[in-house]
Image (cartoon, rainbow, N blue to C red):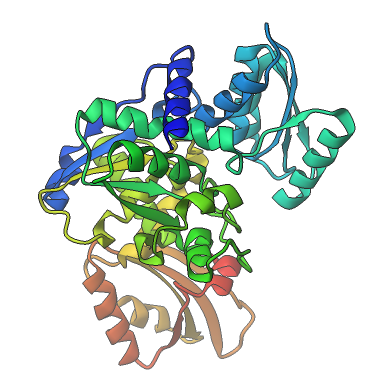
Length: 413
C-alpha cells in the first residue's frame, strides 16, 4: 500500500503539467437539503470535462517514449476517448481511437479537437463489443499499446489522484465519500488511497439501476456479466466490472452500493442545472442522486464526486421527459375514444384546472365505433394526475396508462 500511495503522489505531481486540481466546492443547496456538510469534487471541470484524463495521462507518461512518440489505442464512445486524445497530443504520441459507428457526431468532433493531428478516429461496429474487438485486433497487428478505460494498474493509480486532491483541499478526512461506479477504476483508486491516508473515511457507491455490475459482483463474489444493460447512463453503463478494480472493491458489501433509477437521475441532473447552474452528464450525477438513499447524513462531512459533464444538450428534452415521469407530473394514456359527437368534450370535462394536454394523437383514425388516442398530460402536482385517473375510472372511458410501459412508450411516445 505504501508503494501505491507513493505512486499516486507522483502521478498527481505529474498531472500539474496539464491542469490544476479540480475544485472541491461546498454546496449550500445540498447541505441544507440533507442537513450535512456536502462537498462536490468537480471532475466535470477537467480540460476534457471528466476524470478519465487522469488515468489516460498516467498510463501514457509511463509508456510514452522519451521525448515523445509511441502509438496508443483505445475503444471508447465518450470520456475515455477524449482523455486519451488529449494525452496523446500532450505527449506527442500517436493515437488511434476506435468508436462505434453509432457514436453521436458531437462526441466524435470533441475527441478530434482534443487530439488534433495526433489522433485518428476509426468508426467501426454498431455495438461497443464489436468496436473493442476491432481495437484489440488492430493492436495485435500494429504492435500498438492498448489503454483500458479502467482495468489496468496505471489507470487506477491515475484515477486515485482524485482522492489525494480531496484530502489536500478539505484539510481533514471526510466522514463519507460517495463514488460513481462504471468499470470501477475511479472507485478502486480512491478507496485504496483513502484507506491508507484517511482510514476513518467510509464509502458509498452509486450505480445506475440498469447497469449494477459492482453490486452483482459483490453478491456473486466475483465479476459477472450482466445479461442486459440500460445504456442511458452511458458513462457508467458497464456490463462487467473490471477484474483489477473488483480486487480492490471486494472488501465492501453489496449494501454499500446504492442503485439510481435512470429517470430519477434525470431529475437530479435538472435540479443541478436549474438550481446550481451545474451541467452534469448522467454518470456525473450518480453520486448526487443517491444521497437521499444513504443513512442519516445529519452533521456529517460528505464528499460526492461529480465524475463528468459531457452532456449533449440535444438530449435535454429526453432528460426533462424522464424527470417529469419520475416526479409523477406527466403521464401518457391510450384512450379508447367513442366515435360520436361530444365524446371529446366529455373527456375534456374530466381534466382538472392544472392538467395540460402535452400530446394528442389519433392512433386509429379509420375505426367506425371507437378510435385509439395517445394523450400526454402534464401538471404541477402529482396529486392532480392521481385525481384525473380516478375520474377516468368512474367515467366509463376505457384507457391504459402506458407511462411506465417501456415497449409501448418506445413505440408510441
